[in-house]
Amino acid sequence: MGLFIGLLMTLAILGQASAQTCPRDATAELDMAVAQTLTAVQNGDAGTLLSVISDDGVAFNPEGEEVGYRALQTQFSNKSGRYCALFTCNGQRGALGAKFHRGTIDKQIDSRNGRATVFINANTNDELQLHYKLRNCRWELTGVAMVE
Image (cartoon, rainbow, N blue to C red; front, side, top):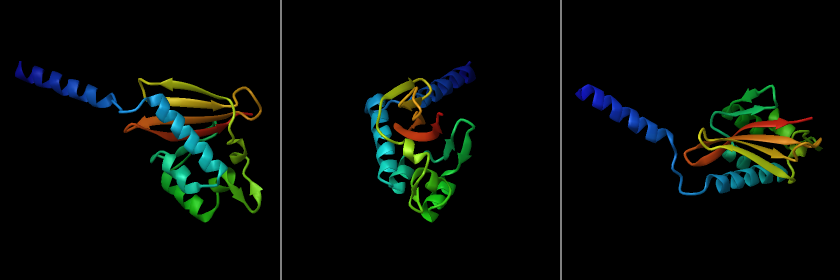
């Protein structure tokens, strides 16, 4: 009987640990993360963009090519690879980076699982999808997709 009660208490503690109780509203935090993401790309600020990206890295485009965080750091410091897709390289604006401009923003938030998809300029030729996950009360960018 004691083992059963111990098991129930452990499961209850684990259940509480998985549900995040954050001091600020998750939607307001997501809005700040989106603004920070857009501003970083618009201003060519790779360091700020890295601060929003998940430690696990980020998936690019619907086919989901994942690039690890450290690989992105290297590409950003060498101004190669995804840096050139997001920012300006050799005088040319990256195709993906050109989609990062303010426009109509729609959000789908899955509070239960701590996930969000942000649609910028949905249903247009300039649609951009940003995917975030909530970790330690902070929204992290986990995916970027151009919709054409």
